[in-house]
Amino acid sequence: MKDYRRIVPSTPPEGLKDKVTMELDTHGLLYQAEWVEEDLMAPILERRKPRKVKMVRVRCSACGGERVLPWAEGMKRRYGFLCAGEATEGGDSILCPMCGSPVEVIHAAGLGRKGWEVTSETDTMTASVLQDGALALTGWRAQLRVYRDGHEEVAIDPMEAYVFDGREACKLNGWNKSYSGTAGYFVQVNHEWRQPKNWSESWGAVSDIYGLSEELLERSTVPHCKLGEYMRLNKLVETYPVAYMRLWQRHPNAESLLLHGLPLALGKMIQEEVRRYGWEKNRRGEVQLNQIRWEEQAPSKMLGLNREELRMGRKMGWGSEIWETYRAAKSVWEILSEEDIRNIFYLGQDVSGLVGIGPVGKSVAYLLRQIELYGENQEVDPYMALENYFDVDALIDYWGMCEQMGLDLEDKHVRFPRDLLEAHDRLTEECRMEKARREQMELAPQFEKRLKKLERYAFRHGGLLIRPAESQEELNDETKQLSHCVWRYAKKHATGETAIFFIRRIDKPEKSYFTLELDEKKLKVRQNRGKGNCARTKEVEEFEALWLSWLRTGCKRDKDGTPVLPDKKERCA
Image 1 (cartoon, rainbow, N blue to C red):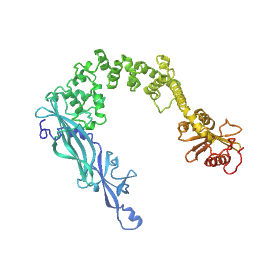
Image 2: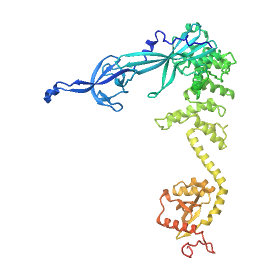
Image 3: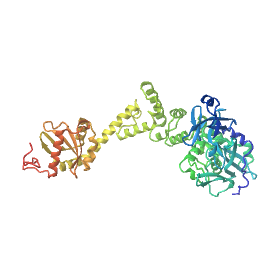
């Protein structure tokens, strides 16, 4: 590649300064402390000599006006001034008290050696043709700099340039990262261009290119790139001129997609490519777009469509999402009609997940009907859009539960229920119950083993008894009667992570009273709760202590199998 460092101009083209000046709309309001003579009436009324008071003089870089305002304590700086009754200091954004222009408040003494501060800046790009006919796209950074004496200047620095010559491209850098012990890392503008061998596209989105025209492109070595046509998409999608030019250099038939294909789809695909994770490490700005058949020449074939489909797409202004959905549906033998596409627009959701698992057109129309019916007949959250109640994911989730429960999705009443929300909630509960039933069946053998191991801990005394849980059903019943969450401990109990016991009254053995969790290794109670998670009564507390003492002495029983108290050799009643 040719060395362009001395060929690409580093001074802005004529007229660019006037253009960017209109965009730099924030000026500067410099302030500095000043001692001024006080009002003459105060010394007269107080019968004393006049004296100076501390005030603040402000100067506006927009109108050039000056004014003395009251001195005020500052929060971030040492001091500020009062403006419209409020304390103002360096870094604040306000309206000039003299001309009303938006200004940034600047402490004059804090400007340092450079003597100026940037109050607003903007990036812009220009197009030009070099001596050898190469097209140069140059990125400029324009800054409005306000100086210590109150005047302002517009500075335009060259930051990056991209040169396109036929099928070759290069990048010029006009800046580099520098480091200062006081300022840290900052961007330093170079005095001349640098041309790296390995580079990546880093300028990003551009809304318009100053100086770009068909006449300019005709004089370049890339007259058929149709960059101007691509930039006209900027009102519909973010435009990345460098990425587009690199795509065109790799695939010249990209111009056919702009002129005779689906220009918005191409624009969105480029945008998605540049926005994807890792693009900042791109290799020379190369864009792939492998979803397009670049080996073809006809726009319809490049997009995987026939002429009628392409005509419909151009008429409706398809973007990449609609085009990819249409093509995916076509691959599974579903041809979407113009009405189907219009319904997808109305729905405003990504429907690609429907492809292959259900009819896309009918499903979208069904969701729109659900939204309409629900809006007429139900009260909805005013802060939530109806589309959030009936989204594509909810329908796909419902179908998945139907398959899980063995329902026939070929039946239209099953696939498209009268009320999707009601059907979804009902099936969710059925799936939950079915899952619980399967888990219960899986845990049943483990519950049986645990019961054989823990039944030796069964104990009776003073009208109360304690025994281990026997099944998931018992834990569920315990939860319903006592309104706590012991049902969640089924797996832990069955696998030996913990041990759940029921405390009941001997005369009412089927009625839940208290639920106890035991640490088997330490023989300590982790928790013992009654109805609504209430604390144990004194009776239950004494019973628990006696039971633990009996456990720790080895669970002794007499010849009849009756527990023997640890402190007295008497039978428990």
